[in-house]
Image 1 (cartoon, rainbow, N blue to C red):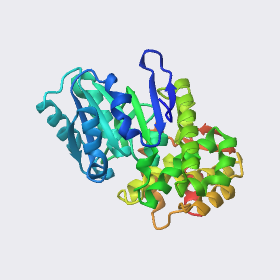
Image 2: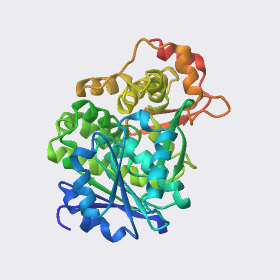
Image 3: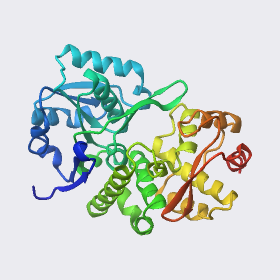
Image 4: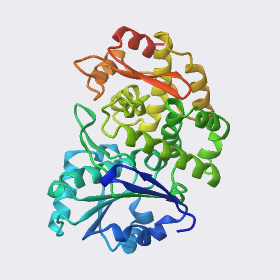
Length: 353
């Protein structure tokens, strides 16, 4: 199909296409319907549903479910509501759940798909920059608990991902900026050339210039796909590099009661990680990273949070093992490594700068 870029996530028998282009919601039937084996259910949230849900449901002949918007919806109550609803509507092993929305909707729909009937088909239609460039590709699904973010979840790959970059246009600037943090992360951990391109063109991306957005989304998805193909379940350490900024970021998100957006936490988290790398003698990138994020309009520091509370949250992070703090730290532009058993004192000193 013309004007559709297709990137394949090659996982042998579980391989799937990622379709990228403008106006693809109107082509959803042609691109996705042959992948449906039975009854389809679209899960969306209260913000996205009024914009796109009816169009998508008609194109895919799907029933609809609407969940609350926001990170606080990533909980057991929402999982129960979604699973009860689709089972009441006749869900079976040939059914499919389709996510239409941002990362929260994708996490909920993907997790529910992974546990319904011991696993039904799942399709992603991400509508935020963060979801289009990161969370919709790779098969991570999760919900939050009182103990922390994303602590209950599954690896469950979708059957397809459809990315319509036109869905970014109604988003508040804050959401675009939050998504940009995940885009920049790919440059920092794997793609020095992409990071340098972003330093020159990042402002065009967040201004939603069509060419810049298309390039940024395609490069992000290609990079994520290569990493997922190499290390789908974070067994070799390759995929773990995508957690740059996340240990700090998740702690700030939780400490703020989710008032800080995920991408905002990741942006500042990348700067804190770079400062920690500098303290450990691994690199001196913090000023460069901070300067770029500040130019784009992202936060690079959060004040007013107790160090002891942040450290306690970090110990609950999935990447902490045997009560030891592990961090992904940048060692050069385009390179990073996992550093294990980082002293609390070093982390505390970075938080208190």
